[in-house]
Length: 303
Image 1 (cartoon, rainbow, N blue to C red):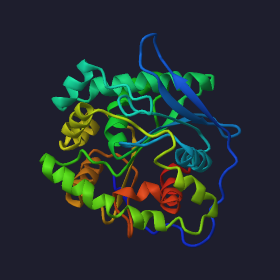
Image 2 (cartoon, helix red, strand yellow; image 1 turned 45 degrees about the horizontal axis):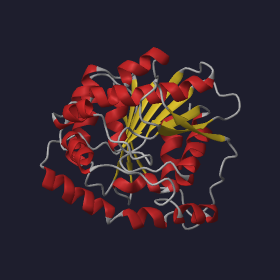
Image 3 (cartoon, rainbow, N blue to C red; image 1 turned 90 degrees about the vertical axis):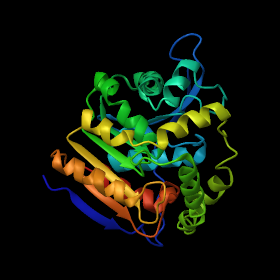
Image 4 (cartoon, rainbow, N blue to C red; image 1 turned 45 degrees about the vertical axis):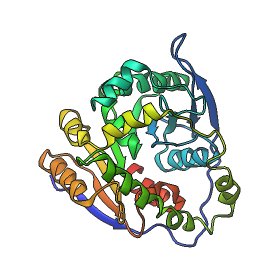
């Protein structure tokens, strides 16, 4: 099955409308004694299902992410659920020791199962809406894909969208750090695309300070062991929806082009439908460009 390959430009100077969609903030403890994590639930009118959005590393759930949830809900017509990641929350609780040991061995499943327990708790507030879509960004791509077996308990997702997957090529820790630094240097280019959106200015000022994420050095080291591996293609080979969207920033270092194109060919050979999209002019941080987010969301979520 041929996949659609698109090259897109973020929306230009026209203003983006911020959808008037209510967003609830929850603090979750799936079981007594578990660390608390915050979650956001955006619920548009007449939602017929849910979209689980798995964020990337160091993503505070402040007003910046609230706006993203509203835009994703508007593009999909689905209720959007996002939670902090275990070990990467503003509460500051570390990843459980047994899970950290698995991550150090490049085994993601126990972290994915732990994360799923929080997502499931948030989904229970939606009165049984089935999971229709799953979307991950950066680190969240690996976690979202690894969560597919558990999410099937709540309604098999019809589509998976992977925005800037990182764990698609083996590399040394030094190379991963260099690629991360290169993409951080491209962040201003992504933020510049927001300059015509006046309502975003006060949100940007609080982006990193509002509900800032805390993590330990040990947890950081454990997560980088996963991100420097190529576990994502193997995970997709074991479990994949019928439709998978792949998205990459043209200038991304953390999502290397050769490995990204190899993943696209793997999905095509397996008969998995969906678009493969390159966002022109941006790197890994394209998810901080709201025009790019809206362009991508319309391409991968509509219909």
